[in-house]
Length: 108
Length: 257
Image 1 (tube, chains in turn yellow, purple):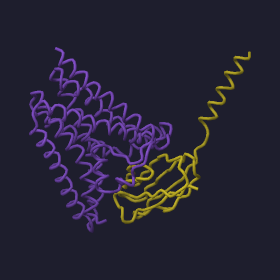
Image 2: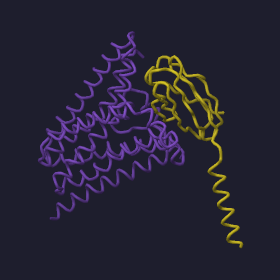
Image 3: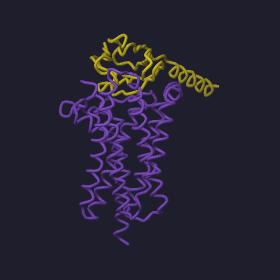
Image 4: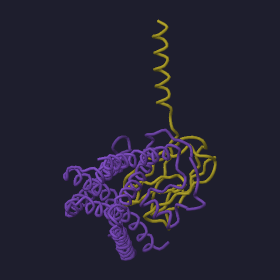
């Protein structure tokens, strides 16, 4: 009985860990601009980013500081994870249109 | 940065890795006395698969809860690394010709798919952009030319070495390139949330910034990361150890025969 209770507790704990929600944020790409261009996220927390490309042409979300690089096709969306990040600013840009597609993740 | 320069650097980065790999494999073929015509079918297959992958990228992006791109890219990185380990052995211990040709072909196809698909997507984005189309196409052509020339230079340099030294250099260069890909594969899996995040191992960003031209070229060829995580560094070192250890064992056993 004790062993079964222990096993049940372990399973419930495992499920709760798996189900623990990761904060999710959304960035749009429109007219080769990131909206919002400044994204505040909690520091020391893993975060899920959804990037939605409203343009018809593809873009590549890239950031050296975040070590992230992923293509999002025109009209498509991508998901990627960042963090946990120490407090600070982490610039990102659109590699296909670097002059306009610029943004920064601010971890606080 | 102008669109021409941006296109030049982007395409150069993508082409450089494939061109350097091809240059190394070209010399490898000479060292093991195999004809180099395997390049033609491998190039064709790589090109076709790259086009298909680029066309299907939207669908692939949705696979496995949005981690399709990362998983496919990680598999392509592995498809370079594993054959390189086999090729390292084959530098000193004879392998069946078809195994060597298959390994070389797989490396080149995987590299072509990775780099070629991104170039196609990038250039394709500007086909209907009259204002910047010519700048992008010109930059892309120049970047491709520089990348291909670099691969030829690497091959030509290795060709001047004595066979014994050439084996060592070709082997080590292949291992460095392939191990760099494993480092990048870990970054991809971290991006997709598929591996536990680990803290930064070291930071050399102030010495060689990743955004600099040198940093980007080192990234393209060796998978350079100025701020790798502990997990990335560990995988990189283990990859180096396995690949180099395999080559060393082959060399040692060949010496004792």
